[in-house]
Length: 485
Image (tube, helix red, strand yellow):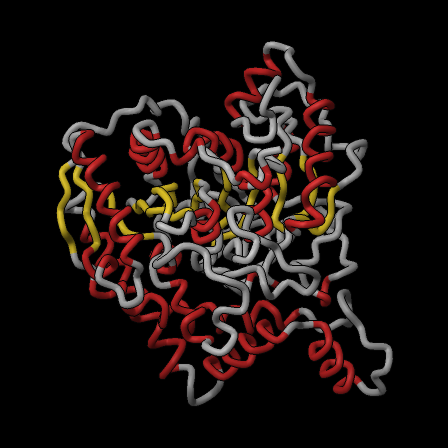
């Protein structure tokens, strides 16, 4: 079979069905792609030995994902494997169990090739905070792939795997998807189990997928979604096939709400605005009604996300003290000294910065002014979004204000880095599903995505609407030439 590197899950599944290629040949092929290209790209922290049990599953279960290799972000536990969260703190920690999503993938015989690089403990928007390496953007090696799931995105964009898993706390799947010309999903909070996902901000985290097409993304979600009794936040929903209604048509009478304050945001590139206008024209041609809608509370999304995520991070990361597991400084002489040394040397600068801010926000005398105030605005935001869906079926907005930025672009302006979350954080804060879809390229050749958001558990609608657009445009067929060899 030709052009395996950039074949879709749909194409590879058909090739396996027709016995044009075997699972072992697919694994060998993509493993070789990592050997050939990832020294430059830096998308993976580890590629497993293809002979390891579970990597070439003998499962008899038949799924569209059976036999199709993927890469897993390094904050999702795989039994017997290192789960480092790209941190020195957990550099040698081996998970004692599989995350629920990993169990489900193994059950249908989806080979898991390795661990994807990421921002340390998922704290970042560029994959520059990893303790081990930087990941480059396949479309322009001088630029970031986005974050925190940058390794997962870069690997799919470069044709090293056809799909990958990331986690999205404030846009960490959708933003890299936009930067790398991929489809990236942030499911409804609770639709995908968080059991086995190392927590950053527990009320915001969701596991999502990277793929080259909308159909493929629906395939992955079909396998990993559904109720899990081990996750107290898991929704009581049954497994379903999200590809079933993908026919290239939008629902009759579809109303799309164009979020005007998002399109008027400070710093958004003219190229991005033009591409978004082009997307709207495609939807109008398909028969959608476009309504302008303002969501004022969204303007506070980045600030609210800043406060809620850091407070929850400080609480979640308190467990990493080097006593039971994790990095341990053997020079410590007292218990207090041990805590200081372990956490000072085990965590990177960005993680320490967020822990300090979070602890301050939760401290006596400040919790009401910062954390509790942020939670109140968060509640208002959810109600505002839910009210919007009484007038429109889905919301439309940018995923990012520009194409991928260069390495170190925000080293001297942390606020601008934090504002990368502006378009994305509202989906996490409200718990609503969102999907980033390739929407074209800027004048200097960088990919840009647009974002669709829907009511709770409206993934089927989002995929249908996104798929209809995809069938009218060529963006999903375009690949970075540097890796098209």
